[in-house]
Image (cartoon, rainbow, N blue to C red):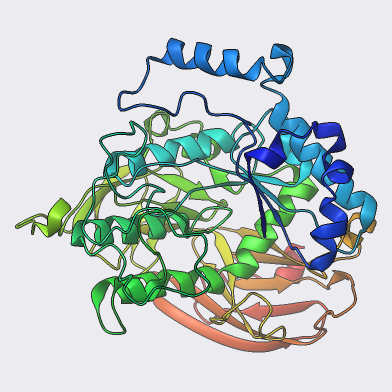
Length: 478
């Protein structure tokens, strides 16, 4: 990923690709993505120890922008900036998908392959709390890809700069020396146990965002900065990184639905449960796809800042389960009725997650990168209690052939009354398609788990559960 800074961003957007020679000197050397770090493109209000009032900040920025831009173009700048990069790369090749990580957005910007992150936030619990509704409200506008700096960008507290107000200082090293060519062995990361707890909770939340990324200043974020194998922070971080990779068939299929059906994977609960008024003001829970109810932990349970131990704090959080469905605890697979508030376990390594009954979640094995094992088995989890549908999407991964319908779909349909899963014949094909794949199908119900293993070769298949509700043949029903 190539990171664009302000001096590159002020190039007139309609000429950015050619005038700055992005193609000749950068893209042709293997750049996979673009990081537009200053697509505002100025921050005239980021000065001083006291944050200016909102209307003063507006005036400061507009006065500065007017030196370079027509004021009518200020808000739309990031849209045109993204368009210039997108059109430039698309005009160069169709074999590499455009991806732009940008800090600013404007209506319609999603069409230019952008993902927006929350900006340079501070490492505080209040910031984490605010990220949750900010994300799903942003996606409700039709901009489908949202992410954050896991742990906050600024960890430390700098009294001279109003925007640099993290809560943690122990072990912070300041701004990274850009001349370093290898890691500093004296850099042990932020040693404040309060920050380490905050970081784990932030990472758990971000595991269930469209884009999963850790970034920031003041202290390093690599997993080994938080301990070693067998220690609580290290193990919790690794657990959720691995889970993210296991969920990749589910996540990639949801991402395809954004293109195919204008879907959004990061969803306010009220969008899916409009008849439940209790969902209207839920700001600390959200849906990741239609199946997963994510309930981040947004307060410390173990340590305050300066590694001060918290005593007798319950390791739980209250979760509202919407009306109209029953809900499985993702970890224990215990099922609960909707329309109630449930006290969920929330120890350091446990993010409360619930799965809507009548859901199908395809998963895979833990990997170091997404296509490390291209023919890995799929684990198909069927959460029983209602009919369910899910479409697995696969393609070549990094080109625009999908625009010519060069991709494959496998429709999975669970019929509760028949106790049968129908795997429909594969639709479509592409170069590199795995034509035979092991499916480990796990039926999950109140009675427990039941596993069936098949080899899917692309043809229609029926897989039955041995735990019937009603004895009805699926083909008779169809």
